[in-house]
Structure formats: structure tokens, C-alpha cells
Image 1 (cartoon, rainbow, N blue to C red):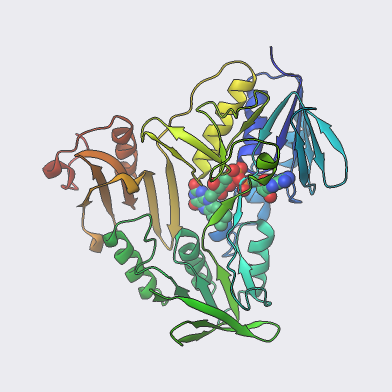
Image 2 (cartoon, rainbow, N blue to C red):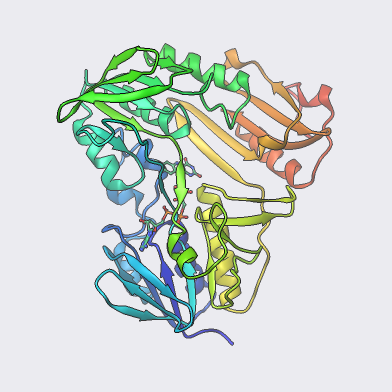
Length: 403
Ligand SMILES: Cc1cc2nc3c(=O)[nH]c(=O)nc-3n(C[C@H](O)[C@H](O)[C@H](O)COP(=O)(O)OP(=O)(O)OC[C@H]3O[C@@H](n4cnc5c(N)ncnc54)[C@H](O)[C@@H]3O)c2cc1C
């Protein structure tokens, strides 16, 4: 029997999608979304891309216009933080002391930016980027000629670098590892992106161990342990994210780098499910548990949770995918490259359209496709099929991948 009252914690990508899918599946009962941010659910990808560079206004990032929720009888309680889940009474308490009863609870609380515990990290002008408010604060200061230091050369750091260059800022990226995007892409792809950023005028420094942020009230410079120092009027720190799983933990739900769910998004409490960045779920394809931070995962898992709530469960086992826009380069990533033992280049990086294929025991497990959308689509299918790769044909960019 379907529950009557569904409560969703977190008004983000997954939270909104659970509600949208429930209505699409004909769920007739009450749906409430409790979110701590003031905005209606919005997409985060533009925050480091076209929203930051001023090319897209805030309301273009909204997942649905406000009127949609009213028309769909989805109650949005915004600017309210949930502070307690009481599974025994099936209630959630918010920060105003209001108690919300549920028959089914979906936890979609996402992640927050990992903080750097360094001297000066709380000075004015030192920013993180997770929310629309964070992006608006950075954008408000990002004028031409401003000296910006970006700590972390991952996707978000590099996207911010490209967007702030677009605004005419002087940008330096400080990365602790020997190369940018070190944990996620092959050295050839990292090298290509480093060269593209340098060509755009970004300074990229690798192997930087930070000591502290220098300044009195506002940041003035960033100092490394080896004594090097970079002047900075504004700092953006992008060093990863941590799951907002504390409420679930306190409620006795099993967590390990995120809330542990099964392939239906269910926790060990039959009334509680979870979706999105906050979950750690099993991947049959990769034969391990994973916690993903991607729009596709948030949406697909949310649809899985909604289907289970209305009694039509379908297991979730999709190939992970993600994208990153930097300058005119569209990077599309599918699969998990960590599993790979071999990498192959398909096409010439000098052409600014090439792919990097990641193989494990001859099978395709991941792809980075740069300005090659057809490779991305083909590779995603081949990864799902655990396809064995013919090296000669796969490295010929003029032949269809897997053809
Ligand atoms: C700058 C940036 C760029 C990105 N770019 C890309 C990209 O190009 N491609 C891609 O695939 N993905 C990208 N991502 C990742 C993507 O945005 C996330 O994977 C996605 O938003 C996850 O959805 P979610 O619903 O799990 O979490 P979120 O969208 O983060 O939503 C969670 C919500 O829950 C709220 N919340 C947390 N705790 C509570 C509480 N106790 N009570 C009430 N509310 C609470 C949070 O404040 C938040 O509003 C990007 C992320 C960022 C930050």
C-alpha cells in the first residue's frame, strides 16, 4: 500500500526529482519538501559555469518555476533546516521546533564543501562554492583585474578559473597533487587541460602544500609551506565535498561515506530512503559501493526512490556520468576510471577533440570525451555491456567506437 504522506529532506536536485516523479507516477498523497536554502530547488552546475560568469540569471537555474510546485500540490518549506529524525515516531523536527509526520521519508541532503582547516581560512574574501549564495558572493566581487587564487585544481576549481578569466580576473590555481584533476583523469587529459588554461592566461601551480591565508581582515595572499606566496584579493577553495549524513547517523541509519542504501534507495528502515550525493549505493556493474556527486545520479536515484514509494520498485544500476564545461571545451565522463589498468587515446589532443578510454582487463570501464559527444554516447553503452575493446579500431578516431 502506498504511503499517504511523503516528506523529503533537502530541496535540491534529488529532492525535487523525488517529488516530481511521485506526481508523474500518479501518487495522490501529500508531498512536503523541507529545505534549508531560501531558493526553490535549483541546478548547481551553472554555479561554477554560466551563472558565475554572469551569462545565466538565477531563475534559469531553477529546476521548475515556483508555480509548478503549487500546481502539483508539492508543499515547499524553504529556509528551514531539519534538525532531527525520529524513526520510532516517524517524525522530523525542523529548526523552528515544528514537527513533521511522515509515512515515507526521503533523505536528499546532498553534500557540503569540504573546509580547509588552515590559519586565515575565515578571513574575508575566502570563499567556498556549493550554493547559489556562494556563487553570487563570488560574482559580486569578481571584477576585471581582481587577483583570484583558486585552491584545488579539480573540476569545480578549473571551471571557476575559466569563468573568472571570462570576467577578466587574474587567476592562479594552486593544486596540491602533481597535476590537476589527478584523481579522476589520465595524465594526458590533465596535461591538455593545464595547457588550455595556461593559454587562456591562468597560472597553474601544482605540488603546492598550503600553509596559510595571509591578511588582517580580508585575505591578501596565500602562502605555501615552502615559502612561496601568491597575492590574492579573493580566494575560492574547491577541495571536495562531504556528505550531509549526520541526521541519518543520529537516527541510527547505517552510514559510511554517505547513507548506505540498496539498489532501490532503501535504508535499513523500511520507511526511509535516500537519494543523491548523500548516498553510498551498490553498483552491480563495478561490483562495489560508490558515492557519486553528479546530476544524473541524483535524478536517476530519485526516480528509483519515487518508484519504490509507489510500490513499483525498479533497481538502479546505471553507468555513472558527469560533465565539465571549461572555455569552449565540453568534457563528458562516463564510468569509473579508478578501476582501469590501461588508458588509450583516441584522436589527437592538439585537435581539441579527443577521447581517453580506460580499460580494465581489456574491457571498457570509463571514458573522458573532450568535444567528442558521439564517443561519450557510444562508450557509455559499451561500458554498460562490459564490452571488450579492440585496441586498433578503438584508437582510430575515424572509426565508430565499438563498431
Ligand atoms: C559548483 C558545482 C558545479 C557542479 N557541476 C556539475 C556538473 O557539471 N555536472 C554534474 O553532473 N554535477 C555537477 N555538480 C554536482 C551536482 O550539482 C550534484 O551532484 C547534485 O546537486 C546532487 O543533488 P542532491 O540533491 O543530492 O544534492 P543538492 O543539490 O546539494 O541538494 C541538497 C539540499 O539539501 C539541503 N540540506 C542539507 N541538509 C539539510 C537539512 N538538515 N535540512 C534541510 N535541507 C538540508 C542542502 O542545503 C541542499 O539544498 C556540481 C556541483 C557544484 C557545487
